[in-house]
Image (cartoon, rainbow, N blue to C red; front, top):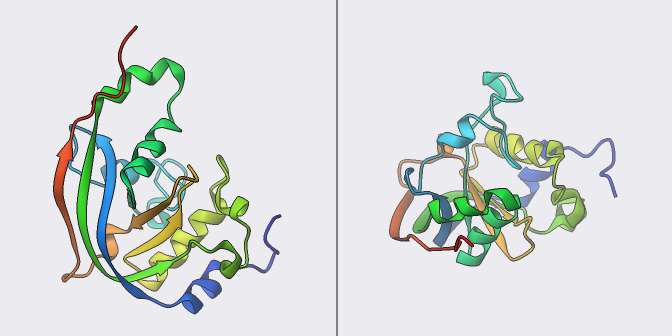
Length: 183
């Protein structure tokens, strides 16, 4: 199902309410980058953010994609790898973060959004989900909670440009797993 032509994230998101979010989240990231670094998102677009690769600078913003469990964080990496890139798995670090945010919108229930789960899980067309990210940015939201496209659990998409001074993204620990054995 495609949302109706008049569906607008800028209208729907404010009806969901802002809530604080506190807890632990995980990120699988290149070992050469800090767990809280959103630099890649400032170059390339993703599901809930827009980068300058497809958008003008004034329509782009960065995001830190966190998972609410370690298996979701790893699943997000696995689903993006082609067989010829499997050897790159050993370059990833798994970091656990302590997160304290003041203004978060829960977007996990597609029905409450007036959408279907498939609307939010498209693998190549991020128009709708980037619209949700844009609406969240316009509202001044620090993060949104969304279903992971892995369908293993949920993600917390943090918008660093909207973090309040009392919010926190702190690394608790890191692990450097060995996920690939060359054959």
